[in-house]
Image (cartoon, rainbow, N blue to C red; front, top):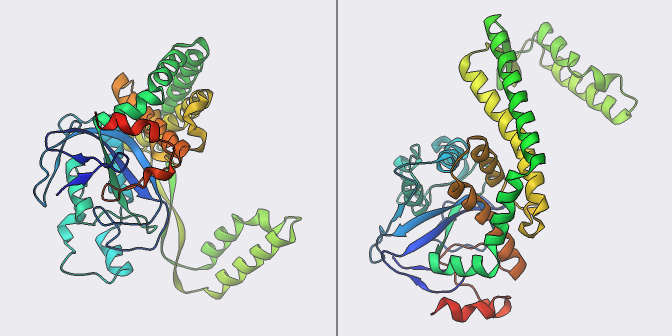
Length: 362
């Protein structure tokens, strides 16, 4: 199968180094055929980071890529793959949402993903969808084209500015404060675990609507009942009426379940606190590099992975490729191009990269 660079329109050749950007459709109806390599008119946004790979073959329907991060995954690869596995649609949801074409549908395509190459294979099988109806596809650029774009947009200057900001006194002081705060929160949770503390998890399940359940549910909404806002009072009254009408019945509803605090819970909580804490630091740092335009980025997963990578003190190269994804997103927006799968050929006559075109073909 031939892949065509969606920016330069060059055919991607065997053994060629490429930059791989996974894309998520912004909105759309659930459709089993809305995935790479099928053409789509939907709008796409980058998800996560940029990945390095080598194109193995282009004369077979089963062409694949040798991804650099598959043998020794960094935080970037791990967080990205975990996100896909946790948020992709399940086989059961597929059965509910679509009238499947049984010749294309393969249940093994819904097994947990372990590598980026496996993820790409499943994309080609049109089997990576999210529960909100969006789907995953890919944009693949020859490294040569990618380097020309980045060089034209002076990405080295952006990376240098970011690296210098990380060395700044203010950033180091704020980082130390965040780390001390995280250690304090860890000790607090460990102390609660030693004292047999619990935490609440809210789940949606079938529950008997007895008087105790109704009383507890309405107690949580007492602020609405006593509000000066009549709209909130009305909402309380409607909820009260609904709950009372189900008295004695078993109905699906939200229930708080208590669990004992354990090490797994502490690890999860500290990780989320760390991502939030360092996410704010990184966001403020990136906003200072206004050329990236990260404040307007739709790549929320990229921001999370960047924070996690900084928290884990990942290699500079791993952090740089996440930044590259933000830079590329801003560059394409600046030039009037949207992210698009590789089977779509861009009509570059109406976009602002004419000056770069000759460089692609040297």
